[in-house]
Image 1: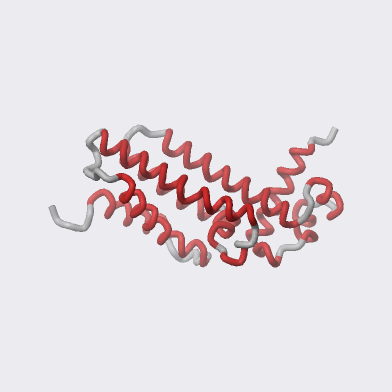
Image 2: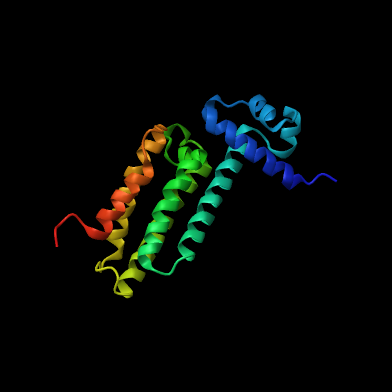
Amino acid sequence: MVNKEEYRKKIINAAGKVFSRYGFKRTSMDEIAREVNMGKSSIYYYFSGKEDIFKAVIMYEANLMRNELTKAIKSVESPVEKMERYINVRMSTFESLSNYYNAIFDKDLDHFDFIEKIKARYDPEELAILRLIIYDGYRKGVFRVEGSEYTAMAVQTALKGLEVPLFWKKREVDVLHRVKAVLDVLFHGILRK
């Protein structure tokens, strides 16, 4: 018996590669069918069309991102390590999940309702996580910051700045070195002590 969910996952994974390669507009159902090695009509049994597949790809990548970040911060106790792990995993995962990233930041895709819902959830979720890490560090006497909300906003803004080269897909930019520099400023500042 054919497992419908298995085939949906197979199509989502294959379509993710095609969307990543060509973008939403230039991807066709024929290219997705070729990548998954199925007939185009067979794909319509599992999805209503290209937009439906794209939505499934974005939701899959969003869940993958959330799971990776949750694992990263739960795997350590120290607030410093939590912040380091969160930022490093966030940036390296963003780099590998180009469809999710493009859906969040590509203005040409704004007309999709599901992307607006993702965007509306993305920033507040991230701010909440950062605030918790910062508050935990303050409570444990590790961070000297009292106002976790504005500090979380500042960290999030710095992270968004690091995302720009990913959006341009300039691979000569070493994101992890930039992350290290941001972490250094975050934890040690720029003033001599």
